[in-house]
Picture 1 (tube, rainbow, N blue to C red):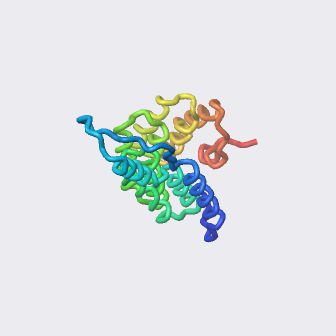
Picture 2: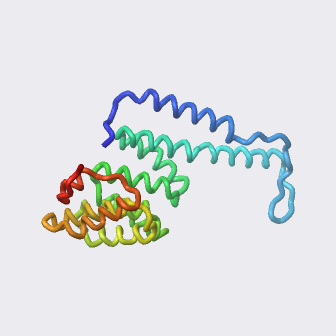
Length: 214
């Protein structure tokens, strides 16, 4: 678990650097003023065309990548309110932005707001039912709410989406132990499959399963 810190000066400096780079690289320079035409072919004054260009530049003032990176920085130090401010900015500009919606779900999960997270994650899955990352997070959200059937369904879908990734098998092992702590057979099968796929051995899980460590 990440430990929250109060000194975010280094993060502020990093954001300032990104902002400076965005201002330098992403604002278009108009070298030549072109006369714009309307759909009917009628020429508009050069001044109006320039205003349109400046308006487009103003719309692009929100640097999506910069805002998302700042949200990640704030999540890394458990500054959830600060993380959600840039996410809301991005979602206002791009309501369907997948990364912003995903980070919002992560923020809600880490705050213990599992119902809110599940709503966002289910909405993301409606767009892409095979998004493995979203499926794994959805399983966690549903399990935290006691929705074990939905959690198992999400993990099954995640393993089918990427059968060579250990994460789904690890999570299924933990989920089965939570559902029925006294029965370890199926959970152990999933755990051993995760390790065979190259996953790191989990000592806590092995203790729960009664597997002797050497």
